[in-house]
Image (cartoon, rainbow, N blue to C red; front, side, top):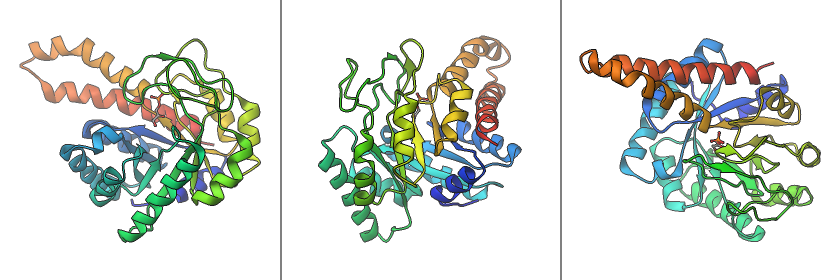
Length: 294
Ligand code: 13P
């Protein structure tokens, strides 16, 4: 069923839970995520990567996800992830995205604020002031679509060897939230996109410092590889949305690698192979939903 992303996240936080968000490059994965959400009786978020949304087929995928979300038996939001191109944002919203992560985290601070405000104004002009905006303060190292071992930033504004990254500067949080009007805030607290180089080390001191400075829900990107008990701990510190991508891909690719030969031999049985894909993604989503639920 249709929901506002901030509503479903706020409701989860009130129960000490968080809502998982899963990157969907395809409809099979989205069906599995929504199926798992319905089985658990809890809401979920379907993420669309900006590279997906920047293509005509990506916009058709968003339209299909919109239909899937609206027909679901639980609240499901469709979010354009990590977007900074105003045209891609406008097109994705027209196609059916109900929320956007406006990602100016690689920009200087004032430019990040200006980007979020500009998108907000453009959406209002598009007649879509209802679109929920997440903004990001502090940058995550790593690639959003391809997983390589990445080390996290170790201080505010510092640059990791693998790309622009810096822990969220908690002193800026109140100013950033009030000037952007963001409804959710993505934070950099030692999390990375893709695979962690070594053990993930979340900076609980930084997260705590952020959590006391704003009432809007926080978002933890790069959840793949973070132990479940740490995700639960984060949810108790106002992290209401947790983004997964890499681990879901790892599972699906492993199943395809293992099963393709047998399904070829079984009369090119693509239908059954897609069933295996569904089972893998569904199991992953079910585990994430259970982990984050109180
Ligand atoms: P991972 O690929 O590290 O799980 O990160 C997903 C993410 O943050 C999507 O926005």
